[in-house]
Structure formats: structure tokens, C-alpha cells
Length: 278
Image 1: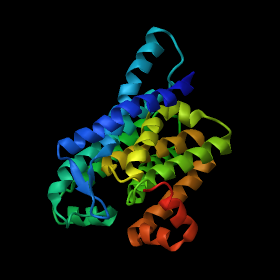
Image 2: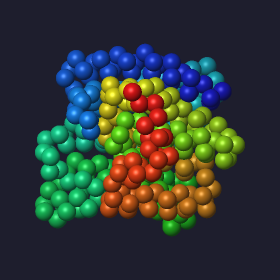
Image 3: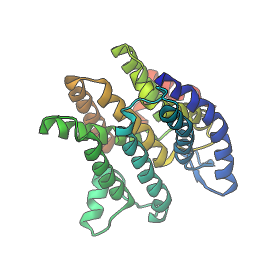
């Protein structure tokens, strides 16, 4: 019955997320989006909270009532998903004070370190590396495969951060990845494992697509972490190496070119990107 996590998370998120968005607005926690509209921010904090609220009864019933409600592997991956969301929240909260010239991308953070400045983005990168190295350990992998899996987890998280420049883009990427993995492997294991987070993200997408809230780094890290864990737990060794090559290419492209301009220049991608907005 590990599948129940997804519907429970959706039900909880339908109650928690709207109230959380109102709370952010009432507290003045807003940020301008690419159109200049001031939206509730960061929605990712609300999504992580909704997932944990859903987890509470599931965890208690799973243990005390001896019900099979949670995938045992969730214990391994939960620290990474919640940990990188927290690191994103630090960036969302403290990074606001770094001004408009704050370093962006890997090159920007390396440049800042050379100048003797430690940006919140650099702290996030180091923290994500530590968390990834921890959760991937203990799986009996050869050294090079261990390092490859750590890189895949970190770079996938970062790739969704790069995607999150337009409303709903990161969530659509996660939905497409989840559908592809479930159909390709003919399994619902990804949803069984991290359904509590996927359900919250699904509900949150309604608010981002309608430009009522922004994920922030908290949310894009959360979405990217779910995607990374799905890749690691669904693909075989060869598949993970192919996925690593893809996210490396996307990361390099995102550092050198504008993903948004590329999406806008390709009609099918532009259509998919705008789907559901309004």
C-alpha cells in the first residue's frame, strides 16, 4: 500500500498550500517574477511543510499499525530531499541581501570564492554535495559509480534550479520525467517512494502556473531532489550514466546560453512551456 502516500499528500496539500500562500502574502513575503508581478515567495517552503504534514500520520500508522504505507527506502533519501530544500530556503532568505550583482551559476560562485566572498549559493552547493555523498553511500557501489551517482544527484537538483525561470516549468519537467520513468520501467515505484513530495508539488503547480506564487530555490531544489532520487532508484547502471551525461550537457548549456530563449525559439517547447498558464 505504499501508493497511498501520493493521494494522502495531495489531500493534505489541498488544505495546507492555499493557506500557506495566503500566509506568505499576509506576512509580506513576496518577490517579483519575470513580469514584475509580486508573488508569494517561497512556495517551496510550503510544499515541503505539506509533505511533512502528510508524512506524520503515514509514519505513525506504518509503524504502530504495522501497515505497509511507506517505502522503506524513503529513510535513505529523505535527508537529501529535505536537506537541499532547507539549503534553498537559506538562499531564498539570506541571498536577498546579496544585491542584484549576486553571483549566479557555478562560474559566478567560483569567482566569488576567488574574491574572498562566500555566497549563499556556494554554501548551498557545498551542503548539497555533503548530503548527496551521505545518502548515496552504503549501496555497495564501486568508487567511480559512487562518484557518478553523487554527481547525478547534485547536477539533477541544479538542473531543475536552472529550469525554474518560468511559472510551472520545473514542475512540468518533473511530471514528464516521472511519467517517462514509470512507463519506461513499467513501475509505479518512483511515486511509491516519493509520492508525499510529488503530491505537494502537483498541487503547488496550480499556484505557480497562475502566477500566484513562486517556488524559489527552496521549491526548485525540492523538485530537483525528487527528480534526482527518481533517476538513481529507477535506472540501472547504464541508464544512470546516460542520465548523467544529459544533465551535464544541460548544466553546461545553462551556464553558457539562456534556456528560456532557447525554449521560446522552438515552437513545440514554447507551447509546452506555456501550457496551463493563465
